[in-house]
Amino acid sequence: MKPIRIGIIGAGSSYTPELLDRMGQMRDTLQVSELRLSDIDADRLSIMEGFTRRFLSQIGLDVRVTGTLNRLEAIDGADFVVTQIRVGGNQARVNDEKIPLRYGLLGQETTGAGGFAKALRTIPVMLEIARDVERINPKAWIINYTNPTGIVAEAVTRYTGARFIALCGGGRHPANMLFKTYGIAHDRVRYEYFGLNHFNFSYNITVDGEPITEEQWRGIAQTCGVNPELTVRMKLLPSLYLPYFHNCRHKVKALKAAEKTRGEEVLAIEKELFAQYADPAVCVKPALLSRRGGGDYAEIALGVIRAIAYNDSTFAVCNVPNRGAVPFLSDSAVIETACLVDATGATPTVFTGFPESVRGLVSAVKSYESLTVEAAVEGSRDKALFALLAHPLIMDYDLALPMLEELLEVNRPYLPAFYQGRPV
Image (cartoon, rainbow, N blue to C red; front, side, top):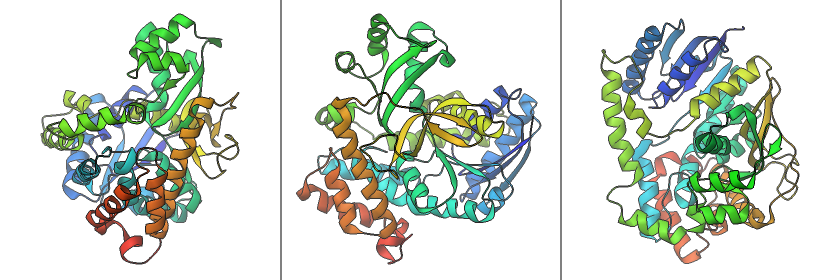
């Protein structure tokens, strides 16, 4: 096997041990020879570098590990660059959650106004990283898990020429449900997958090439985490984020009533996690990490890396430019869809049709996403406002305008296009 060098930007993330664990599980099918860890937080980087060395030693995996505060050192010579950054940290996430709630609107990490604010902060930095890769190591692939991953993907693929694939654990949702409910192995399952990151629908689900039965549909509807009756009626397996759209008032009420936002919970979890990572005696993945979330992050990322590195065609859900796959969306619009991944990258599988019941919503959310990308790059307050007005969960000028100004002001340090007058 060809040895693979991986650079990780945002290696101080609490998710990094998931990658390490999966590398160990894949040692017979993926040979990682070098890990280059990079982060802007020296303390977190040092802790994670130490944990990485201990973990890999414990499992007997011979990988060269380096740590650097200079991301160019992680990029130069890498075969793959994994991006998992959080601009502003989790405290900025808390702002994303709380500010919209004050206006009676959804405050959530990737959906609605919260996701909008996160995108504005993240796009400038991700464009810098992608341009660095394009300039000094253009053959490298960027494998992105930075949220909101679909919006980030559209920014990078529209404004750079970097080789880029964005991923999300939610893409395995249909296969996960069939495994959970009926014990069916993931590699036996295929499906059409239409939509956007955190707003998508699976259908024409097959096992060994045969459509799942009515009984199986009803079974996964009961376990999928979304309204079972609606799932059966639609004959679509929706993203776990659909309730934010179809039960929005209930969700907003519940979030307002909660003692803590999810971001505040994550701050507490990460404080404890990093205390464990820093302990020289800890050389295994902490059980607490399961409470952090992340799903199938590492398995999907390393599976895609393996498919590209060894030209081994693999089924995976990816965020890629539309390029005609969905005729009613623009070619540059990034969609989240089922793909075949090999050395050439990710190629969307062919759709047999598009469910009419959700086409309108997908189109509206895509308009919001594309306007958000343009607003972030140009520093356009008008496009930022239009993005919020296009979003089905906002669409109220009297709420959107003051909320926009508050979100921009609290994120001022991260918005050069808006406050320094220079497009990114």
